[in-house]
Length: 264
Ligand SMILES: Nc1ncnc2c1ncn2[C@@H]1O[C@H](COP(=O)(O)OP(=O)(O)O)[C@@H](O)[C@H]1O
Ligand SMILES: [Mg+2]
Image (tube, rainbow, N blue to C red; front, side, top):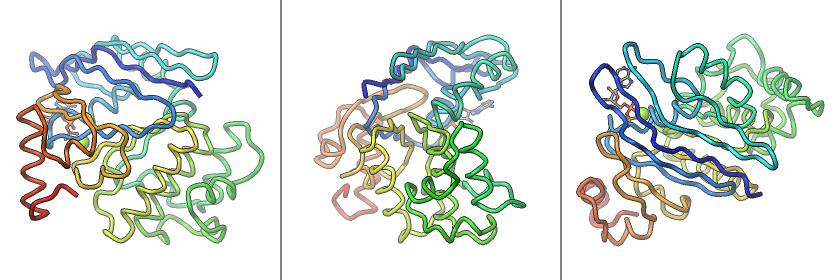
């Protein structure tokens, strides 16, 4: 416990255009911080910058990232040559900070069973207990180990990617719209799985455009608009509608129109 990831002053530019302006973000072990905002507001760029995976040419990224896990501290470079940055992040990406993309099916090898893939990941991380404990932690039955990716539903594929993140030992997980495109019936259980992981001590940044889903799941909500974090709030405040930024107001109003009055 006490693990924390601190991003300060993140700036991402494409040519002269500033896509992300001075974003500060703190993610602590055991919490779910939701990052919400209109499409194009810079949420995915912010997450990918924390994995050393933003390459814009011509472009620049700037800022500092400090990750403390136990008595170790990591401070990977956030600016400079993309390839050097990508390399510097190699020991961090996966091992310390995991990534759960939308459409996880694409992140899996189509020619190897789930068990082989998760087991291999665990072995690389120095764990010899095979895939089953990790599948179990991600809420999957042991029989899933024998399946190929094309035999998985979207929700199961997401859980397999969660199992891989756990097998790697990721202390933080950046989940970028992990339930978009999934059947509503599997969305909620998958999100509950994220809550369960946070309760076990993983710090989760959860990018979503579904304000209603944050209730009962997220501890905090950051609202992004036009590349800036414009409000730091809670699901309850969003539900009450007592928000202070025009961007949050717009999101709340849009959600209420869909939900017929309430955010939930
Ligand atoms: N590689 C890139 N080069 C130029 N512009 C980009 C690049 N990636 C993203 N953008 C732009 O940055 C803005 C923020 O994108 P993104 O972080 O993906 O938004 P969000 O995830 O909030 O929908 C968008 O206007 C997008 O078009
Ligand atoms: Mg995005």
